[in-house]
Image (tube, rainbow, N blue to C red; front, side, top):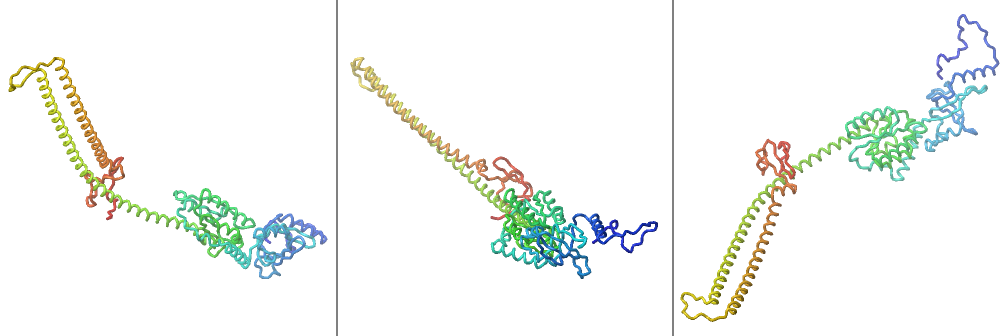
Length: 508
């Protein structure tokens, strides 16, 4: 045991400094041991952590007697030794932290960190009471714990569940379970900050304890908290990182309940635990595992790079498809434009013919009406001449008919009424025929107008097509017409200018 120089007791053979002449105390053995106990209690702290090897472990009524020697001592008989008492509740806490897999006999011969309250007994001299114990498990015990946990996970069919998860499509949120202010997290943090500053992804920190009696509970709590975040706000990947250390610090990474939470985690879990020589149960059940935290974050960066490469490939394919579709649509638009122009010309000629036919029909009707009116007028004049006694130029002379005025007036009025009704009926028939013809012509003109408007350039652009013009504002119908200058792309709501050197020629 190392003692600072200021607290070192003078040896028996030490010479007294010159100038100091004092009587040497004479004490009984009991008084001497009592003074020694007082000196020890005054100079040693009330509690102290001691690293030692457990040479022997014996059970007593309320606990255990531990015989301690120096770690890795070659000869126990010449090594520093100390006998301590460990209450039963201290060992129960160790069993609880290790999941009940450690027996008291397994501690014999192993190294451990012991929190000791030093005591001094007159007959048994320097002793200690063990307040806490952190054992360094032997490789055989760790392997036994690993096999038992692996068997339970395999029996439940979840040992390789993480390996079956698909690769994340996008990594926008990264969860990190790590020891607080650890060197392993310090290796990961700069890359996480760089990703966040670049706007690629954000990170969520879940500090946890990886060593000591509370490591198991702390890891389970951090994993449950990360699972809640993954199901709520979302996590695309979870990192579990720690720095290297002695094998004692790896015991918490062998527990079944910690591994079970990783197996059932929603998102892929990547582990970076310890150094290259460390291999834990959590590495076996994780989606991917790395030797160190630096390599773990390297896996995340590799996933991001692969995703970026795939996105660029998809972008080029989409751009190529868009260019091919635009080229085909441009050709279709030009063909439709030519067809529209031909159809418009044909419709215009047809409508001109229809209008000309209508005008001829109207002229024929007017001539017929005028002829009928002239004949009617001539008949009326002849009837009037007959009624009034007039005769034609070549008619033989004879005496005028003696017709009573009342009779001549009645016959004339009857003839006028009859001709008037016939003229009115003829007028109605001609008016109705003319109205029906004009209505039919109007409907035909409206239909042609709608068709012309639908097949017009504005209507075609409104349906999603575009018109490509060169810098001379001439239509571009073929790929060979595309020159080095800019092109004007006319759409339904305006026109944009594009550069032809960014286009790729594609043959459909």
